[in-house]
Image 1: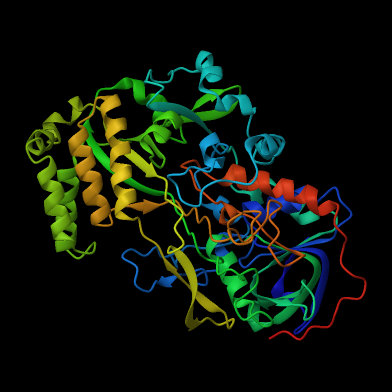
Image 2: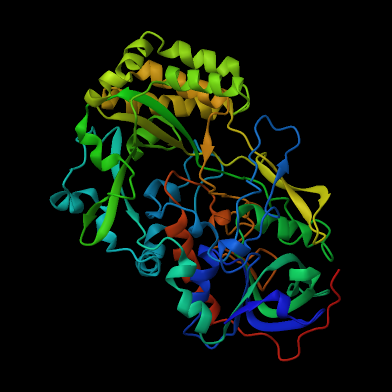
Length: 535
């Protein structure tokens, strides 16, 4: 059942067996996994049903203290039921084997669970997301069915990995009927989670304070609470829930909010390129290849052997179709746009990028003249995504600023270290050399793009409540339960101890289904919930 917080009585109290905070991929998958149980479930979603009544501006990080690079959250981006699945590209694949491993050259890496434990949940996650058989992640299984086969690359250097595309991007749309009519399921819309209240004298959370439409405030008492609100918001809620524990819930070892990771990427123009074999490696949701009714495309990634041998973090690459251009032409356009006030000025980066391929620029400009456009070959750019090392200095903290709900706004500091940058450049060298591209030029252009912050992020907020059975190394245990709190759990890529370079959503859904199975065997809420005065 869908409910709007505007219709709740002021200062009321709701009750449930399980309270799920967040209606994105993790929250919806967990609610679906609990549908066959006898547990009553309430999903607390800050946004509305559609983009027209989205929650805007509350999920906004302010600049971090002392960080060389900060990642903000777009305040104009609307958040509503379905979360990131309303705006993502639908790309899915399981974690790669090296992602689970404790890699000595990657600080704080390694999962307490492995691929064998997650595999049955991956199979179910494929169904939740409307995807096909797991075997279609194997390039050799796919090869006989592909119009464009994988590239022949040195397997000791690079590997091809297949990516599936969800046929229906929004999980709220795909499972709308269950969310509206599911047994013992309520979805409370336009209800922003403020903080959790601990039950004094116990190791339990007693209630969630909710700020609703029109300034209504209520609380939700439950037997189990699960935070599914994303890597920044999950950390903010734990840190802001300091009524009993001043450091926040689950933060006895000062780990909540630390180890933030993202998937950073740069888009490097290649100009005109006639290499037709890259068709499989172009992400184009309008025309993917199909294998047994599953839409697939592919990425190239560093091989596990190479990463071990040269102690490198991961890199993955793919291609995008572009009008023929070079980095110098793109930089020249940026100079012109900044002169007209269309983009923030950064002439130093633009001039440096112009210098990287200035010799080739006139040829490409001539090809773009109207009389030559009919003979233009396809243009490409190389998309390079890098794995970020888990460093405790990259973190979410609470700022002094408060929003309308009396919540502290999160403050996020994150950067790539010089050591990471050098390792990523080495990874790109391997990729470019194997593909026959201009290695020195591409590495120089990537370096300049990172220097000038001409990079992007995929909104994969990871690591802030990392999973580890040792409470001095992680915020949650192998079952995603917060250390030191018996009835509080966290889901999503926030629990990832290392990020890899693959899209995280399939793994998020698999972890949610695994947790649902675990929660079914737990006791429901007490028949007489304790009276707790909310702060």
